[in-house]
Amino acid sequence: MKALLLAAGKGERLGDITKDVNKCSLMVGGKPLIRYSLDHMFTPIQYQKITELVVVVGYKADTVIPIIQDWYYEKGIKNTCIKLTIIRQELQSGMLDAILCAEDAIDKSDFVLVLGDEIVIHPNPVLKMLSYKDDIHCMGVIGYVLADCPERVSKTFSIDIGIPEFYAFMEKPMNPDVQMMGTGYGLFDKNFFDCARVASDYPNALAIYSSYHQENVSLCQLGFRYYNINSEEDLIEARKDLTITPRQYD
Image 1: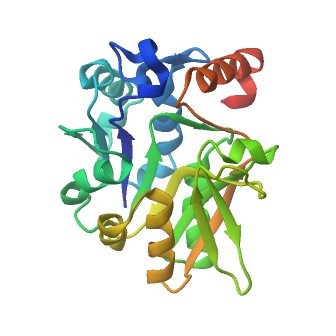
Image 2: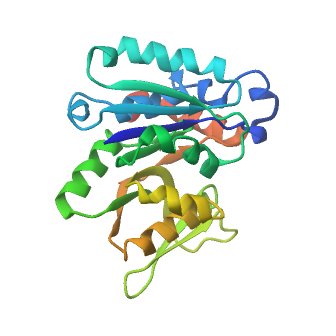
Image 3: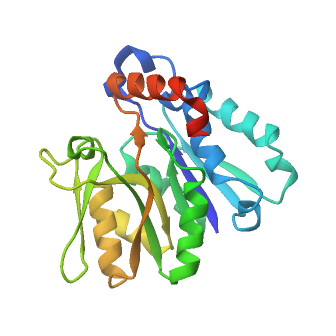
């Protein structure tokens, strides 16, 4: 099992805030944004499951790579058998392209996917997905949160369940009527790369992947609150919430 962390995007909607820095390096709740994802991916229990951390960087990479390396040494990850591999996405062409940049490094392993610009309010969402997969013996796991209002779902993608159980994913729906809000957290096998190659966007890749495995892909609720930092509004909200009650988000 490997871990794939994406931290390559430009963050164009953040405007001048990310003019000189990668958005994953922005401070939120007293630490760089990417540290939330890093801290969730590796705890002592997960050291036994994950053998390598693959990080895809791109825009203003030199402002985020030192944060990753400092964390790697500070947390003592370097003293374990977990390898750190950093890949540069030369042209920022979206999330699916960033995932495909890591295909050779993942090398046909199962992998955990996490975004460097997201925060899930949960003690350990990665461990929950790993345990969930082991418990129900599914091929893949897609992490979601239950949004407190449907409007929040439009910030990422919606997940709907049909009858018989069939997952429908929609990127940034205009008027969502569901509360299942997609996150960047997922657990996949090597076949996900083939799905990413032909998909139009990440939700479409999830739909193709789910169909490929004949619905042997499960949804896992990771919590009730989620931040995906794509705009100044998102950043202000996350900073406000995580400053008011920081212990709740550790």
